[in-house]
Image (cartoon, rainbow, N blue to C red; front, side, top):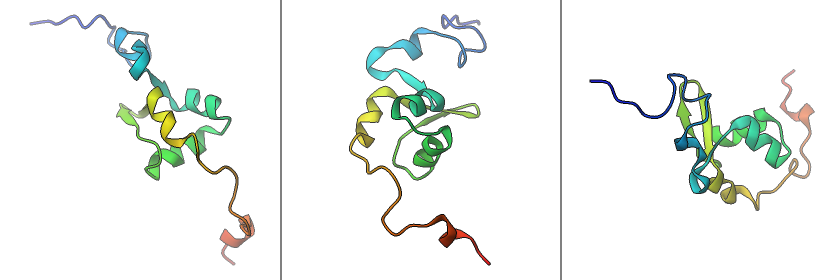
Length: 90
């Protein structure tokens, strides 16, 4: 039995109705990074830290547009007194 989902086999990379539902639109980490004006690595770190929920499809993380509200009031920048030199082991 074959089921047509309205998407090609490479549905993650293509536009299909699942990804274009406005209230639950899924964004790539790159799209989220552009909206938040941060690096893709920072978005990946927020996902890894649990600050930003994501759905893993294949090897990529997708974030619901509505979940961006969860981090809109986040503190930006490094904590006071932080120095990258502090992390370097001698």
